[in-house]
Structures are given as C-alpha cells and as structure tokens.
Length: 77
Image 1 (tube, rainbow, N blue to C red):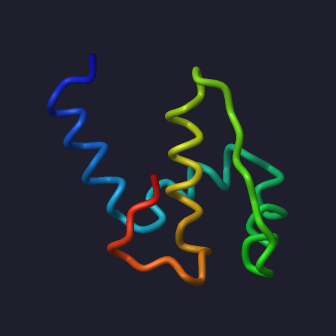
Image 2 (image 1 turned 135 degrees about the vertical axis):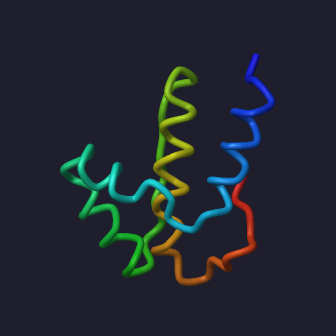
C-alpha cells in the first residue's frame, strides 16, 4: 500500500510539467527519436509490463512538455 506522504508527493510531481525529463533523457539513449516523433505529430505509444507501470508513468509525465496541445493544468490518465 502506498503511504499518504508518498501518494501526495507523486500527485504534486505529476502536476509539474516535464518533471523527470533529465532522468529519462539520461536513462534511455534512443529517447531523442521518440521526442522527434512527438514533435512532428506522430502518434507514440509507451508500453510496459505491470511491474514497470510507475516507470511508464514517469516517462509519459516527462514527455508532456513536448505535446503541443498539452495544457499545464490538464491531466493524462
């Protein structure tokens, strides 16, 4: 079970546009190709197992800054 403090921390950080982009950029060498695809308007799907759900959420959150139609106060589920 996720503690209340950790849950609040995750919710706060999910509101920060592009939170974790540096981590994603350094961890995944081919991320530049994904960013390029987003910027030119191609659809991108980030897939992972249930074990990696948190990591997938972190990647998607970090890549939000490259979405042209993303508004700062929108939430992606």
